[in-house]
Amino acid sequence: MNQPLSCLKTVAVILPSLDPDHRFAAVVEGLVGAGFENIVIVDDGSDEAHQKWFDEARKFPQCRVLVHEVNKGKGRALKDAFAYVRENLPELKGVVTIDGDGQHLLGDIIACGERMLKEKDKVVIGCRDFSLPDVPPRSVTGNRFTSAMFRVCFGIRITDTQTGLRAVPAQFLEQFTEIEGERFEYETNMLLQMKRLGIRFVEQPIETVYDKEEYSSHYNALKDSWRIFKVMARFMAHKR
Image (cartoon, rainbow, N blue to C red; front, side, top):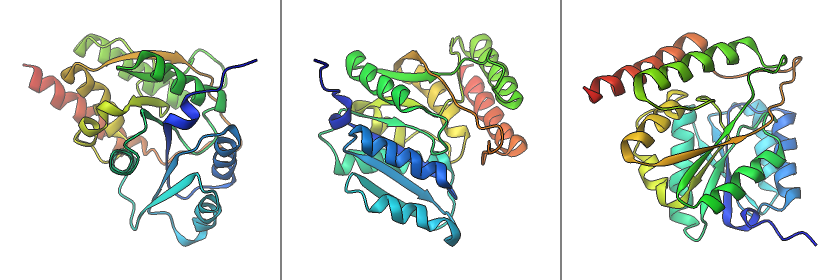
């Protein structure tokens, strides 16, 4: 007989979202169906046409929906969710951050949560395999560049610097709410600041599903890449 999964009761899933679609609903239903008891959703300034998906999520007692009246960015959404968990769910042992477009499989979400509980004092980074043919070229190029920069400039060896699937132990949430970055650059800065703070991480191999017909992202290649570059440049300057 299989032992019950600890993370379903002791780990909160954090799901930031901007203008979601039917894939968001499938993700929420999958989490609830798997048995997760705490799902923290952030509506990051979605328009009226997309509110139905958040209304559907509110029907599940496992879901809490935090609302940004205007779009504040993924970084701010994550930090607000971290603060919510600290203040309202202090009994939990950590969180798992995911994306709402179905790219993260339920089994991988659970695997990251369980590994975090086992490792206790390490952040778990869900790492994709960029050698697969169905990975979008922009994801391959962006990650290879930032991974090389991390290794050469900062001495950080990490396979996937832009993954949204991460498991964070509860004892680090306060520190993570204080890290700079309001949009996609926050996830990069999180990894850099972990080195400064002495927070270790482990990589968890994951499978990532890309829908070639519907693949979309609110990542702005020019603006967000510039923000990420500035974060790395600032961190490098502080090292000197």
